Length: 532
Ligand code: MLC
Ligand code: AMP
Image (cartoon, rainbow, N blue to C red; front, side, top):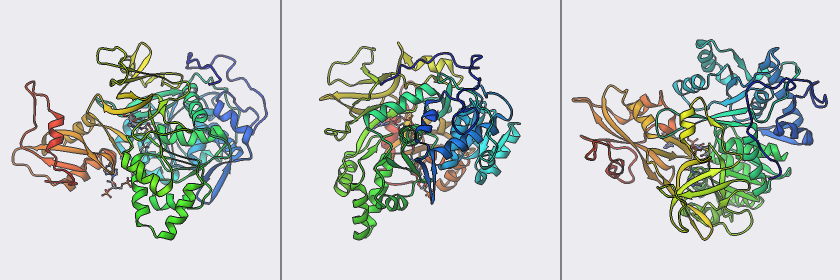
């Protein structure tokens, strides 16, 4: 790592920060400070984003984001860390809005494209959003959420047409982004990263995976999580590479795009590789030939966000010739461990610390483990987040002596880390999404027919884990799984909605009355989707 990062004071800029700087660039005052944006001028003529049939250069991204920034500023000199929540489908407008918020001095709070209204409202309220932006296709729902709260609402495509004005200079130690992530208790927490944190998270991947301006990556992941935002979109932008963005994952479209033969990188969660393997197995031999040819032109394919089952790694290698590079990361820290770009990648392992990232394993008494012993992963480095938004106690509790405590258990074998699971079974990973069992239980308990419930993760070959719910119904009540799922989907994201439902007379509890989740897991018959 070349630079030193210091997470200094944030908040309102010092008096010289909003002064006009070098007038080069697309506006009279470019508003420097954010390295990612400043670098874009070095590759102004290169393609930054491909979205359907359209390609957009870095120059266009700079121009469009200056317009968005000016629209959001609306005459002010600096947003001074106002939170700007935005719902934009993955594409050029998303990138322009994200950069526009940053260049105006705001904090970007990306909203999920798939969340029902109550989840969106929670994020808008918890972040204390001062402005809400949406793509025209989502205007109807999002505008009224904003208006009900008296928050100014802007349309992304209109913001893109505003005349660019003078932009502030942004101190990179300032807060840049809030991503919502589920925890072991309560509702999701906002993970705050500064521009410096984001830069560090990007730079370690640029170095480790040798990103360069000739790269072309296909983006298929949601852009409200670290994997899609940092590892795919922003690494591409840092490198001056091209990011070809699909609005959402679709196995046939991904294969068709790979078969075109011009991609160099692909990154996804294990569930996506499972779905791609399934689509391959259904394809004609001519199509498989073209798909295989496209894969052979790529230089790297990466898996992460959840454990990659070894049979999936092996099948992927059989059909594409690629040994997937598995790495480990977390919203709070970006990426921490990675198998090597060059050299053997160990199946079932996540490799070694990335450049600039310190990792240690501690036992239950807080002492470093002996070699070969399991321990909890703790991480330190310039990419580690700044705080949970407005939760100082939760922030304090998540650090020990300056190390972030991940809750993940691992062991080092022959110098390579192997993941063993989490210390808390109330966290479920499904399709690469992290979900909290208590959060789902709290919603289910609002249902009038449900008296008690226990939510658990059930191992699943496609989703990693499925969300399972064991339910005790109120006396004399009846409930069918489909209507319960429909009811839950109105309140929670689809991936949090239980797909394994079991009706029981009682929940298994220990002598203290605590529900025994491992016993609950064993109650679910193997291999059935739902059963009543
Ligand atoms: C959807 N379905 C599920 C499900 N999600 N069923 C079980 N479990 C789940 N988790 C069902 C739906 O109900 C629906 O069924 C059907 O699948 C299709 O839904 P969909 O939403 O269209 O699915 P799809 O688009 O195929 O989504 C699959 C996916 C998505 C893998 C593309 O889950 C995804 O994008 N995951 C990535 C999440 C991610 O980016 N995580 C990174 C976090 S950052 P029906 O019957 O209703 O039609 C992080 C740090 C790090 O973890 O290290 O990277
Ligand atoms: P999130 O909070 O959504 O960022 O998810 C982070 C969590 O995903 C980590 O704490 C791990 O539990 C899990 N995770 C990420 N990558 C891997 C991996 N390669 N293997 C196993 N678990 C992983």
